[in-house]
Amino acid sequence: MKSLRVCLLGWLAGLCAPCAAEQLFRLQETELIIPQVDYEGAIYYKPGDPLPHLDFDRVGWKRVVEKRHRAVVLETEYLRLTVLPQMGRVYSLLFKPTGHEFLWHNDIARPGGANNSTGWWLWIGGIEYTLPGEEHGTTWAMPWDYQVLEDSPARKALRLQVREPTTLLEESIDLSIHPHSASFEADIRLWNPGADTVYFAHWVNPMWVPGGRNELTDSTELIIPTRRILIEERWQANLGPSPQLWGGNPLRYIRGWRMGDIMADGLLAGFFSAYAHEAEEGVVRIFDPLVNPGVDVWTYGFEPRDIPMGSGAPSKGYVEMWGGTVARFPDERRPLAPGASMAWTEWIYPYQQTGGLSYANRIAAVNCRLTEKGIWIALCPTRPLEQAILELRAGGRTLVRQPFQAAPDRPFQTSLDLEEPAAPEEVVVILEEAGAEVLRCRAMGDAE
Image (cartoon, rainbow, N blue to C red; front, side):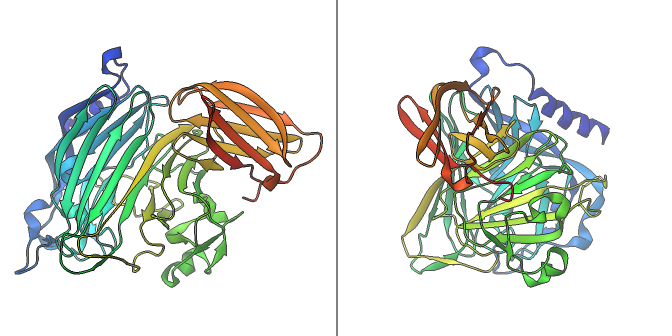
């Protein structure tokens, strides 16, 4: 067991090693060994049922085996993304400026029960892309095909493909990185090749642990641009009544949680994030809220006792911040007509030294707050900004317009005193690059 752990930990530590200049933008196919409970011999199929099921009585719970996975690594000077393509899963998201991993990993992968058509799920970690709905869907359990799409100086890209066996929907995900970027891009396409309309929900499930500890820190903040949250009846004993206002809600921080789900009751912008205030770093997903209107957040709660770590080691858990093509989890569905398809692009990236988040797009994560004397702003971009201009306006007046530079490893901060107090809705932050506006947001008050 020790040798397995040394192998995995040594590989993760190597992610932080300095790279030669020619290696700072690369795609590499490799192999990754992950220890797991000996469960694969307990998988079985029912007659006429294409889904794999698990006989829990036959699982070798006390036997740990080496599982060799095909892996593809996409890397820039700021980011190292590791994909398990045959599982359709992003496994590792390492942010080089802090040296921290942002995706939860089970120390020994293990199965458990789940409310989906397979009846089970694998606690391994990372980011999963799920169809056709339900809790984790079925595609996590399917073998995926993959191919390298591009390995050029301008783009590194990998395509993952799967057919969901109960609906026959087909999904392709193009994961890509670009030079000098701390983000990765996912171009997702769903296609109905059949003769009947299919009802489905697609959910992206990142298992986040910002802070570098492979567990949630005590001051982790969950950031969702919504006015209200909804809580299913089964979780209201833990999390309170439904609906609730989100501004100032204690559930914004992991300290306010017990086990359960919350859902956003509508979105004001296309992002959500988790931020570890102890480590001053966070991770954010960027998307089109018209195409992906759903946000469902699950955690085991604050100081939980039943995290399914394969070794049995104690853990403070992780947060699943689900993003979906429907607004309600898990029962809502949307139609896809015969021969029809839908597609969208989304981004995920780590950021740091912003004290939280008030707005993010694919260019930068921004925190703009009103203080007693004026305005404080912090900004962490996804790539170097060398010819950028920051403009602050209040009540239609330009308060400041100044050039600045920033990068993922060099966040920008500034403060401005105001002669007269301003309301949050009056303060606007504008970011320009090379003469074009690339970001616009407003300041936030303490209760937001």
